[in-house]
Length: 363
Image (cartoon, rainbow, N blue to C red; front, side, top):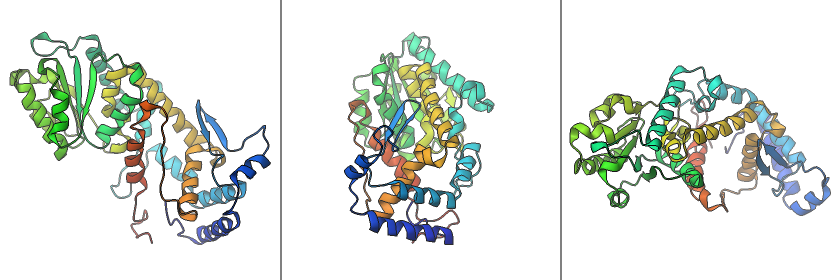
């Protein structure tokens, strides 16, 4: 988000922000809080049960008003509308970033492929949890190993860890992502091939790290399972169905991905299958509903009360004016321990850009 000054209005607002930083650089946050009306804290929001408190930041209403002017000078409300409506907002790949559609309530979903895929996730999760899905020699599946990397690993791994208290481990879900084979070896050493289902999560089905681990898992399965029965122990989530089938996955057990779902947002897609297996599809549906509630807030709230926008504007202030270039994410709940790792990928891949939308380099 650095160096957003690329028109005359933005330049004027940028200079104003620099003056405000000089004016308030020694501002006491404690004094500002004490001067505000105690009955109404203008820096706290409750969005569908999610509480956000920005009152301890070195910012006041004059700074905030200027930051909101900056956002309006960049037509941010129109950009939000473009994102939510599925317009082409990914300029480098000429595609939409329409993961918000995956989070629509079932009665509002108009994309037949999404509805069909979510029904398939529901059926697979229910079959595994109920024991209806049987492995070779009619064995019940007791363990599921998700093999992926990046967004195909971090998202579902983070959520499964965060919501582990809701899981009955029937079956138990594991995650393997490290190209070092020891990672997968440690997971498989206590499992039985006849009781294990492998999920291969790869959008292209060509990701080197994922395929290396998938091949190793396949060879492990073959130590006890005839090749003709491998389909009972393999599923895949990919846009490359042909490669997944050639690997040994039954076509009916390949869940699709679409090019408008970025990896770091993919837990809302079929990549979230391990979540539905771990906590049940109803729990996964409630996760989607919570995300949709924030989508509704993001797309309808004014900038003055739009929490995602306020957090973004606060970062512009902190990074560009206050030169605070590091962020600490401190989850005091142990179950949220993977959240910083997940957010690191999300933020750095989304905001770590070196060119503007027209391709011109940022200073």
